Image 1 (cartoon, one colour):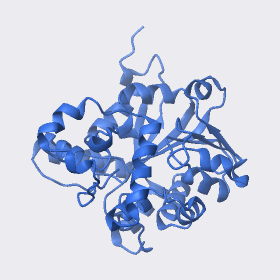
Image 2: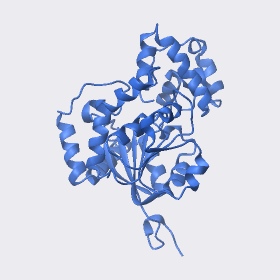
Image 3: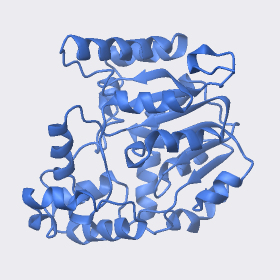
Image 4: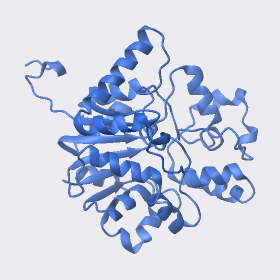
Length: 328
């Protein structure tokens, strides 16, 4: 999650104090059943707690699953994602895989909007937070839903596009996992990473972990990083950063855990749209420039170094490519 909900105080959360914080940190884990249990608790509290209800709706984990899926498909966020994918040249007739999509509302919306070969890789088959509901829908037959990582890796299908939304900060071995997934992407294919969780300092990291509604109360694994950590993990695994959608674009719709009214009419949005069509590499250079200024001149610019979306392209490990330091 990108926005931590400091106003949400579940009963288990009230017992967490700072003294317990570091004791519990090593217990954080990825456990689908545990996460489903945490969200079910949120459902129970949502009837009397407005903030709990807003958090639940931001996760699209409402009990009314039909309404939640339709709400996402008609959201400003999905509209913006569709436009950005079009700017980036993502073709609806090429294989696409969403990884870690939880309930699968993004995959379903993409399929509904005309994408022909959509795969959803999601280890959880739970009802609210996993793929069980999506698998029960009659209109999900065109989506290849996979809960088994080994089956996904052994399947010969390769993808032109990988898309993750609010996922990378759940990978414990970030570069290793990216390298594994890279083998399922066609040469020149892209990875679109949306809505990551960032922290620039240890104080910011621990504050976010402590304030997260699921981390400590329910031992759900989350871990924020600087954007540079994500970029370097992709680069070492064999990718190149090719585009950035910065903070401030489209009313920050890709970052906020809230449904927003449609607002594309700001100067930055228009500039970024044009750049993504004609010269997306400029947005990647602006990320590098901002990183340089922040690191060496102690500036605190947070447009391109707190991106709403990062786009990486798979590059090939040619033996004569000095960029990879490979020698015969």
